[in-house]
Image 1 (cartoon, rainbow, N blue to C red):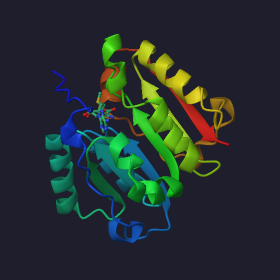
Image 2 (image 1 turned 90 degrees about the vertical axis):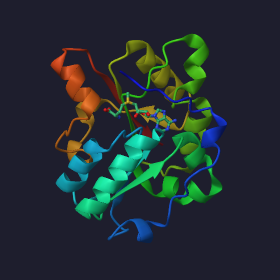
Image 3 (image 1 turned 120 degrees about the vertical axis):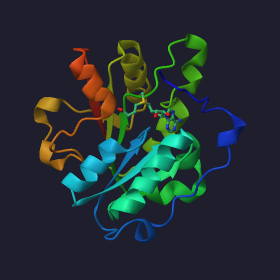
Image 4 (image 1 turned 135 degrees about the horizontal axis):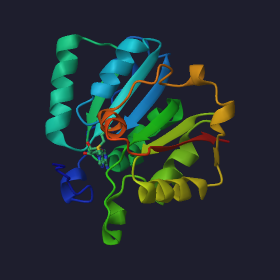
Length: 209
Ligand SMILES: C[S@@+](CC[C@H](N)C(=O)[O-])C[C@H]1O[C@@H](n2cnc3c(N)ncnc32)[C@H](O)[C@@H]1O
């Protein structure tokens, strides 16, 4: 059963600050990827071990999940992975986080919570204001990945991102996978579930122009 939290709750106004790249990673010069809504981070552990030439940050709003991820990270001593607790929108909207967005090579929204009722759309993680922050700060050529098995959510996310004139959809035919944060196509937990249950998966990649 899903245990949603309301991201608009005042509880998330207080944010965990993201430390400097040097404090988070062994090699701060590597390509940087952020995964939004990383749950307990299994996907990012797999990625970080598989692609040691990338740095990864996971942001997750459910405290219990991020605690699990952080304690596993301490045990494993992986030096190209970092986890942050809170509402991704509030964290990345903080002035202090600008340096992170400017340093991003890519950001992923994998199977975000759908919030099916129209009156709850405002709780969806992708919001025009959030995309505007990314659009203003991400460097040219950096990428936004979206993936979901909910058609209505996919259309909403696509419409929100495509409405920003700085983001252009990439035709996947011409996309060079070796430049991706996930060249070996590691799957998230929800993706494994969707594939096992033969659910259709919708995905897009956008480039900042
Ligand atoms: C459906 S789960 C998908 C988890 C994982 N990405 C996957 O594909 O298996 C969505 C996750 O996003 C988290 N989430 C929802 N809103 C968020 C927000 N505003 N900031 C950070 N995480 C959020 C949820 O707590 C949940 O863990």
